[in-house]
Length: 196
Image (cartoon, rainbow, N blue to C red; front, side, top):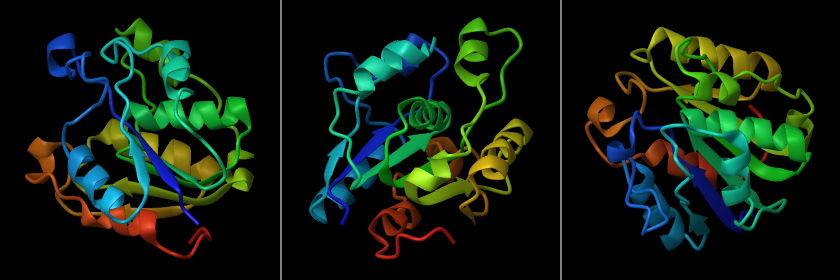
């Protein structure tokens, strides 16, 4: 039974594009709508604002993330660089969770960005798939090539179900044109806990 969900956002290009640190939550793209739908379904949802996400540092993300409740009935959702963080954390922590859902996962480094190089370049722990009830990855035919490469890097090691939605790009508001993401809500609420 799913009891709670944690959504880890992506990494904006600069501080101005991040949310107000006073709120300590992230409310862009499909995240607020998804959180509302899941809350109405009886699932506790956390959408923490990661520290300085425009210059992501794994240890800082980890410290903020581990303030959330995480157990075998938790669903972890990442968007973009949030996916890279969650996969690394699951490999480091060896924790069990109900589901891991990666939305437009990213793991390809920008050569000119030392922060992202450090953040993305780690080996994916193949034992994660033995500790996660279900792995789902969302992609699109209009995703950038580095995003498609990133999806393959994760999927080759973790397996799981790939959901491809046409014309969703990198799953930002600009790409999908709406804040609604019913396909994601369905994957969280799906009763079957097996990988497809």
